[in-house]
Image 1 (cartoon, helix red, strand yellow):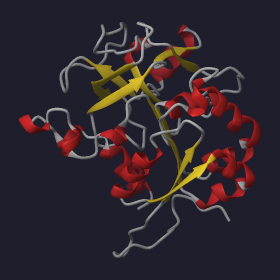
Image 2 (image 1 turned 60 degrees about the horizontal axis):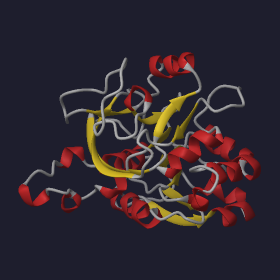
Image 3 (image 1 turned 180 degrees about the vertical axis):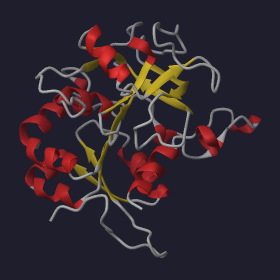
Image 4 (image 1 turned 90 degrees about the vertical axis):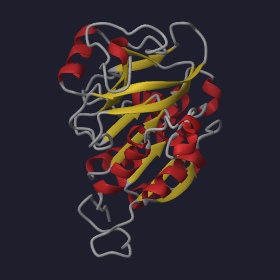
Length: 279
């Protein structure tokens, strides 16, 4: 039985409240699964961390969950490019159950390495073209980059980003540069509102310029049109390079002792929106 977003899954203490189940999918090298599960649990979800091999053995069990999340880390050591091997696993062994999952009004979130996996698996590609709409490649300066960035929300359709216009989150990646298949594809994604999250110069002041690239460090990797996250046409699938699970509490802000931790910029809104979608 496939449940949709209109069904009740687990009743909470209050009438009309539900507890959606989240599957945190890990692979060898994944290292943000526990933090991501904690973020979802804090938002009110029930989480199950499962290895990709376990899901391959029982793929039908994916239907028991309402949210699929692929967290950050270095799946398979990024041996053939970040997220590529995990993406191949999804495409080869789980295409049918994933297609059914997406068609059942459920949610998929990919964070950092998870975003790389979503793009390279085709889960963010609504077209029938075999080649993904975009990829995430090496940062312009060719190094691993670990810093906090200002972000502007540029989507009206993304379920995960509802009710927020800006975020302040940490990034940690070497291959985070968003590059579309071609200029026409980039324009189509932009016009459709699918370039959901962009690097910005200052919190609340400047959206990443649509016709130009912000300089480093505001755009930490050189992404086209300052893209930090992308959603599908339905708004129910989101991939982003920043780590929202690393800022769900005031004490995680690098300058919280100076009173600069703004709760309105926390990544917790992403997980809360996912839970709220099923309530």
